[in-house]
Length: 120
Image 1 (cartoon, rainbow, N blue to C red):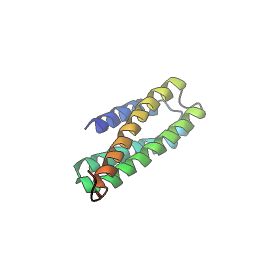
Image 2: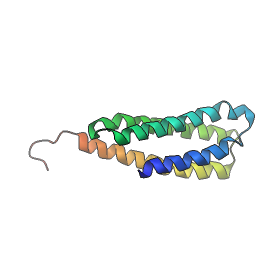
Image 3: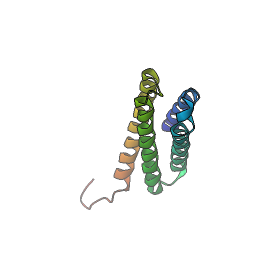
Image 4: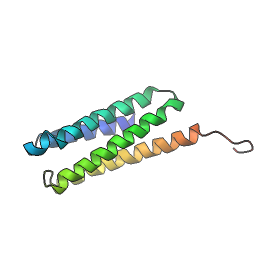
């Protein structure tokens, strides 16, 4: 699944950044971001194998985890714990993942909505 591949790549990138964070943030916000990535991977993996009607709560959970990680990364950048280049690099990838998850959620909303009589 392309979105899972993209998330895995983002996590590997994050992992290399996590190692370079100052200790004050590595073991606080850094660990939380790491955990959010793992939860994001889990939510997408679970959604992948569920029936179409059961996927949407997991996709929405993945979107929430991603949004939280983006905010925490912004805090790292604003506190100068993450330099501009690294922040921009990971932000671009996370933005792509967000678009993919948003599209998936929109598709599920359409598929799961009841069809009104007389409509195609």
